[in-house]
Each structure stands twice: as structure tokens, then as C-alpha cells.
View (cartoon, rainbow, N blue to C red):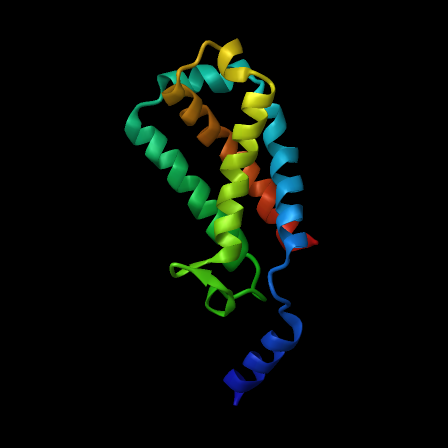
Length: 144
């Protein structure tokens, strides 16, 4: 009986993922990523990161995003959401926003050129910024 009540309540109060949710993610992602894109220390750290560290940072972004969307918010269940290739659409947009907002800002501010970074260092710097962008994007998605 409890499972039925829970399912009914979830369906009543759990609205579908909307374009406005993506907009909230974008605002949150850009807001928290901005200061890190233009910080020299981030680009220097990225230059010293080895592949294992880079993979770890990318994994952290995914773990933070999943945890913020589906573990910290008890009213949201990944199994109830629209999926693309078995992955919840909300989570996919969160990852695109998290990495994409940092990438857009980096190139808008000419950060790779300013810090004389190659594509590999730029990718690592974007991953560092995405750690912060995912927090902002997921928070904005969950709060509003």
C-alpha cells in the first residue's frame, strides 16, 4: 500500500522536465563557472594534471551531478524520468551544461590563448571548472 501511495504522490507532484529547467541549469552553471575560467591557477593546475587525475575530475563531475539530482533530492527518481539511451534526460542536460558552460566561457574570454594552452590543457581546465559548474547547475535545477 505504501508503494502505491508513494507512486501516486510522485506522479502528482513530480512535474516533467521542461525547457525552463535547462535554462535554470544554464544560469547556475555559468554563475559558478565564471570565476574559475579566468583564474590562472586553474590553467596552471590543468597543465600539471596527468590522465588519471583528469579522469578522476571528470568522474567527480558526474558523481556530483548524479548525487545532487537523484540522491540529495528525495522527491526525484531517475527511473521516472525520460531517458535517452538509458540515461535520464535531465542528467544529460546537466552534464552538457556543466562542461559546456565552462567551454563557452573559456573561448568567449580567450582563456586558452591567454594562458597559452593546447587542446589537452584546455580540456583539463574545462573539467576543473565543471566541478563548480555542476554544483551551480544542479542546485539551480533543484531549488527552482
